[in-house]
Length: 450
Image (cartoon, rainbow, N blue to C red; front, side, top):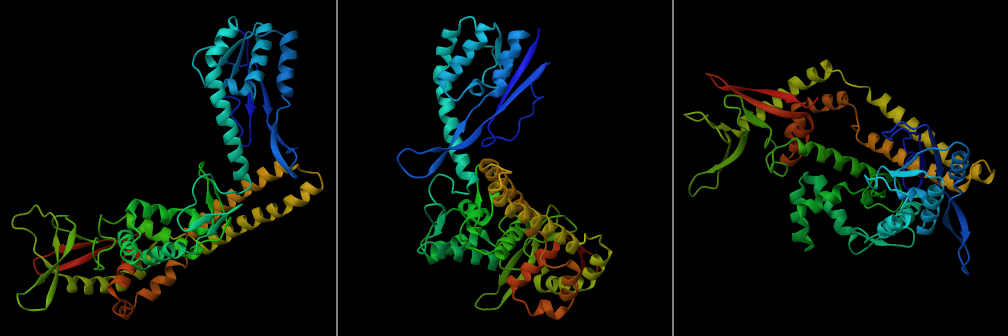
């Protein structure tokens, strides 16, 4: 049995398909590509893109089969045969006249016999019309995506939908800006959500707040359904530096136990009892009719009997600062750290190279080297690649760890900080603090994040 295959690719909707992914032994593969060209748009001035399907390889397929008959033709789906029901019907008739059996490998697991073409065609007519309507909608969305136009739907909170891009909503954008500032100040998502409800009466869920924090729209970028991001499409609400700090805080908070990101004490969520391996929580103790308050660290779920004793919080805090000042410089010196300056330089050079190619595209179109459709696709691809490189660059620490270690190895640095500021720096360096009990007292062992 002789088998051939036919591929139809629309670059607006998909990347180049794998011509070998058939699961059959195929003698020859014919492939056509959709081309969008400007077509007059009625009485209105201007043009719009329309898909033109020359189908030169399909015609070649028919000519070859007339001189060298085959038994089976493989296609991914009936959509690959034409952009309308009439075109699909015509091509099925052409295959029937050549006694070629058609098999679709994606849309239907069953072969489509061409001996009873009319009955089979009526059964698939409704499904085919739905698929082709969906394809036209997706083609329209893809054209808008290549032009960096906003995706369909309501604009995110803080923006209005303009003609070709999002515009700042002056009434709601300050609410979003204040939300980000609260998160950057305290590193707590739930606290920022509560702040909005109290200050502005804007009630959102924690999950909605998390979507705000990771949404590229507030950074001046657009993210499409396929996950690709295009940079600098509209005015941002937060800066690039603020966005990078938000990402670092989110990554750091993922390492912490639940409900400790907004804890008022700097050691919350970091200390573990070395005896029972239970996390330790901060407990407040006060005496009756007195305003003085005492803080202790106690194991949350100690299985021992008698239970592990409480440890004064201030003593653990003081020894933690001493251990950081003594252990951090040695740990940084002995650690094998990548050359951040070299990595940043390489990423910057890669971004500059792609930006230079992007700037050359208009001249290549005007000189006739590239057509407008190919240039638009290439420009879109370059913008998404630049966005990915920019994302990798923003994830790198702003300064080298060696420089930070020198600054934070001074005890006075920690003593001059507030608890919220101290909490921020502790979580930048420390993964865990293990409290090791001894017969006479206790000592700490720090586990750094690097």
